[in-house]
Amino acid sequence: MFEWLLIPAAYLLGSVSCAILVCRAMGLPDPRGEGSGNPGATNVMRIGGRKAAGSTFAGDFLKGFLPVVLAYVLGVTASVQALTGLAAFLGHLFPVFFGFKGGKGVATGAGVLLGFNGWLGLAFMSTWLAIYKITKISSLSALVASALAPIYAWFIIGDKVISGSVLLMMIVLLYRHKSNIRRLIAGEEKKPTSS
Image 1 (cartoon, rainbow, N blue to C red):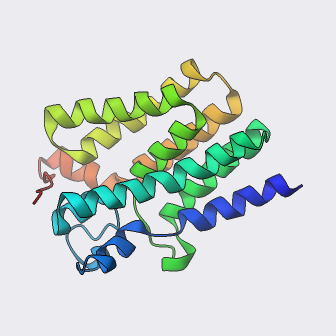
Image 2 (image 1 turned 60 degrees about the horizontal axis):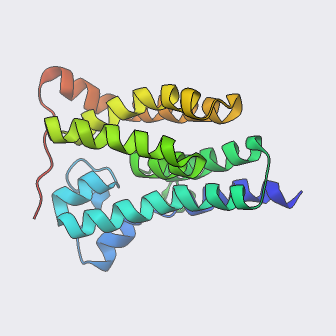
Image 3 (image 1 turned 60 degrees about the vertical axis):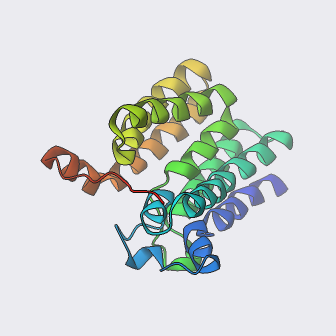
């Protein structure tokens, strides 16, 4: 019965906004009121540079990765593990501690995927990196990696429950990028600057 407690615990961990905490710690403006207004690593890069963005990414990644790994170590069912990852992801998108207004989920989603399966996480992150090296556009990299992630999950893991949770997460992630999609189509999507 205790294993089901992993799900709300993962949501609460996911609800911790690393972007906001990092910006506060480094004396930077609140990311919700600067740049794109998104509390995520890409926007933090715009307003605070590489160090702040790296710290944000690491925190967001770990809050997706750690709950899933803990679920695996505890030997829970695939259903509980899938729901734990999904809860951490949704916590980032809809954080209870920050008015249910969170980030878009790329870093936390990557952490969840790596927690599910090392090869799956590496496939997702390698796709993101390859597209970014070519285009220098973070949102496009996320969109391509997210579109391919459910296919990777099916062929690498094969489990219907885990693959289904990956598909659901990536659909939500793609939806969260709808404004980026519109800007990409219009040729107006900006590349992040660094300092």
